[in-house]
Image 1: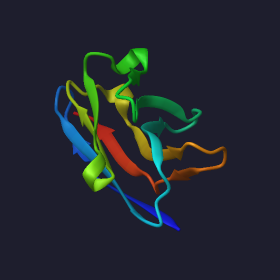
Image 2 (image 1 turned 180 degrees about the vertical axis):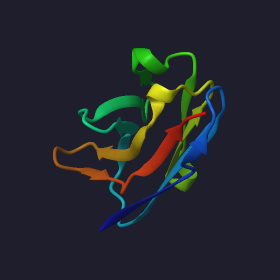
Image 3 (image 1 turned 90 degrees about the vertical axis):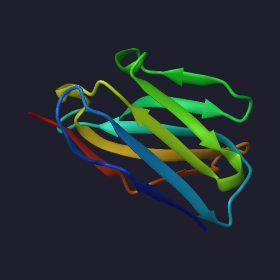
Image 4 (image 1 turned 135 degrees about the horizontal axis):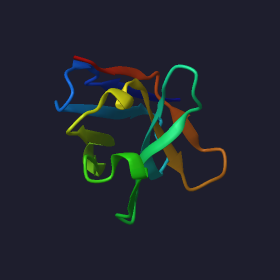
Length: 117
């Protein structure tokens, strides 16, 4: 089985920064994509940022220019650097990894990010 361990969430004031980490361990399949999603209370889960093995990255429009996703393949770890945080970024952030085969997908347990003054 694959386990994802997320860390780095917390509370921060508007304009602050946080860095999330997601480390995969266990019987890991070949990872094609690593991504971050978030879910705010009363809202659907949404994709925040994703990076593929080919180096492609994509971001939600709401975080472009503020968030940066990166990946350390040697450590099977993904990071999300979040700058200029806004109250509307408050949500539970989930890491997800996807393999090359259909069905190869694992979600992390989620980490809370709260942006408030």
